[in-house]
Image: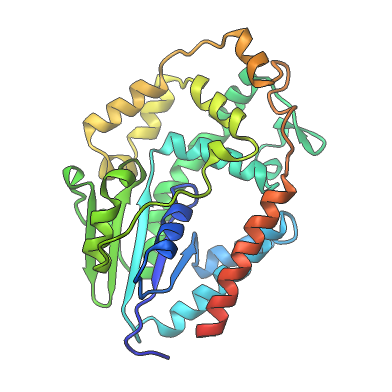
Length: 316
């Protein structure tokens, strides 16, 4: 084990741009650090994931669980033996929830969460039915999981409660240090503005360039995802519940929150011609997408395997 080695963990909840960050750091010249992307490495979560998801989703899900177990074991074994650099990211909770919905659909685990949206193995719903189910059963649980992840999962692993440190919204990013752990935290909405300077301050690398990866609108369900984001409208009372959370109040200013609420409460009528132009059925908006794109699953699976091979070669 290299005593002077400092690994970077891009440790975020899913769907906040972590793949873009990892891909960008992989492509950055003269980066002396190994970079690992993980979403949750707490022991309790991994045990629950194995019982709930393993062998019930895609190969990607199973391999991701195994990879996270290896990272978790490595961290606990070397927690106090080296310095650690952690990058974590927040996101507007409504945008995060919409992105998560389609990710769950892609990974074949959405049926576990929203069985009423499915007829057999396929999702079947008009836009209005989707919107009603999404707002009634999906989004609040997803939003509050965001706060729980920071309060419990992040804190459990690093013994750091980020809510105890004031986030200066005007600075757009923040670097915190406690003992042998250093943390870079920023909001996804600011990524394009701050990435190069933040990485320079955090890693002393001055040539970092963003290389975007895993963008929902570019996936096989991209047209439908963009269509849903363009037309979904949320009840004001629901938006009040979402944006009054400690997570939102901590990482976003009052003005930013009001802009989010205004954006997601605007009525965006659907022109019938838009259904035709995008080849989306008004009766079932999911009818023209595959529940699983085998090509995408295979690509994600192979990328994760590459990460695991590098990790095992160097540290296990």
